[in-house]
Figure 1 (tube, rainbow, N blue to C red):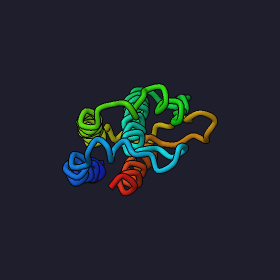
Figure 2: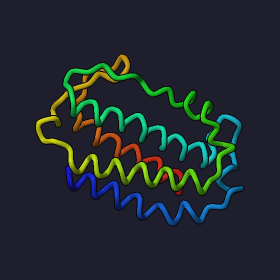
Figure 3: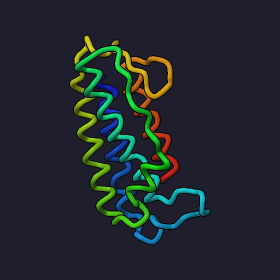
Figure 4: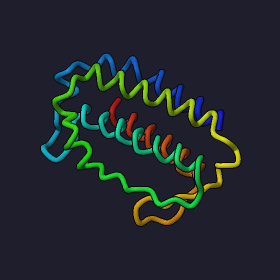
Length: 145
C-alpha cells in the first residue's frame, strides 16, 4: 500500500498549486444550477476523505462491518461549500488527504482483507475501498483542473 499512498501524495502535490491558482470567483462559478461549482466539487472530495477516513480506521479495528452510505448531495448542501472560502477549502482538502496517505501507507497487512458493507452494497475489502478512494480522488481532480 506504500505505492498507493505515494500516488495520493503525488496527486495532492500536483493539484495543490493549481487549485490555489484558481480565484474565488472562478471557484464559485456554477456552470448550471444543478451542476456543482469547483468549491462544491472540492467540498465533495473533503466529504469523501471524511467518510473514507472512518471506513479505513474502522476496518482496521474490526471485520465484517456495516458502514453508512455517503449521501453526497446532502453533505455538500448542508455544509454550504458554495459560500466557503476557497483557500480554506484547498488547505483542508490538502491536509486531510496527506493524513489519509499516511493512514494508507501504514495500514496493517492483516486488515487488508477485512470486509465492510457500505449502505446496501455488497461486502468489499479494505484494500478495495482504499484503491477505489484513490481512483475517485484522481477522477474528480481531472474535473477540477
